[in-house]
Image (cartoon, rainbow, N blue to C red; front, side, top):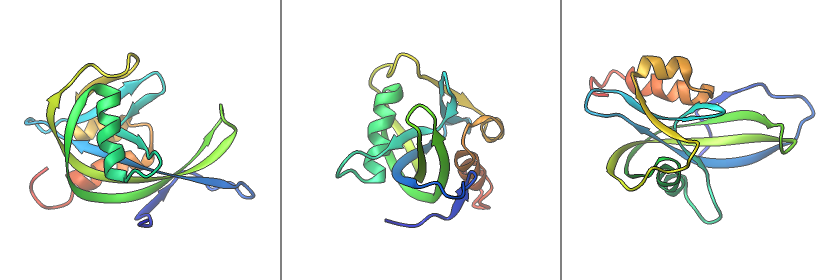
Length: 150
């Protein structure tokens, strides 16, 4: 497993963190807007935790389909970051190891989860509004990489 490029969240002294690896997709449309999922908990990039015997890339592809009905194709790996969180409903501290990939939409399969809405927004807005610091960081990194193409 590849270690993180960055770490986000507050490390709580004495807490035991459960490693939770996952994969996330950074998708932009023709006008340069970013795909995010609006949920009752906030705005997030498409993706989530890995299941048994699943790679981060496979998790990103599966989660995009489950969350919002998008069939996606992964491109290059953009980076990895750890997000330190406390899941209050589970009473567990997680070290979410988030691997981010550039991705493109192949087709829309269905509408996805009932309480998840696919939203397209300018990268600057996504950087301000995404719930997790790691997701804000990767959008900033992807859009300010100096490559000239987002």
